[in-house]
Image 1: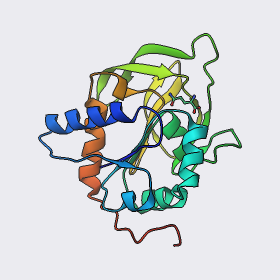
Image 2: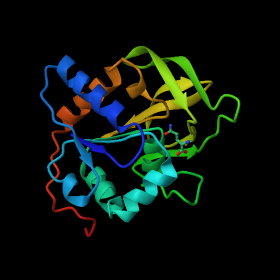
Image 3: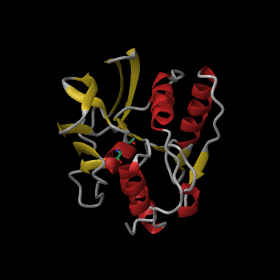
Length: 203
Ligand code: GLN
């Protein structure tokens, strides 16, 4: 299992993934991804929250942009949380971050405004139920295309999925609740994808 390891809440995701896999009786290893060869032989990828401009610049400096995008288009399960969702979205509304256009959503960065830029709210997620949503300078999903919306906050989508992609504007890794990590592991199991290393962005 891959976890983009440049910046943000990487260790929290790692802990949650290992706990989720234990709950599911699965045995996974989590590899922090920082260079192209780290992308070989992974079955899923989490892009964590953090600062999307920084993570985006690092993805580009280390030559990973086309690789991640191509693996996604070939079926690699990818879950973007917060900044990670911004990066895999179709349109970020910000010239400094060009979305990978994997998940058909448009986002607006830091759109909750200064007063409530971080908050916790109980969400009702389809197929999962009540879940504590931790929002930290979260983006708003301002437009959805061909995706399933799994949860809303104030009538705005906060969790979406489509094919091998999941996006959340909140941070399940900052709670003790591993159900969304387990959902991602289910997706990984179902897709049964393993990256080969022959997909460096030139096809
Ligand atoms: N505000 C951040 C951004 O736009 C995202 C915040 C987060 O990932 N918690 O990049």
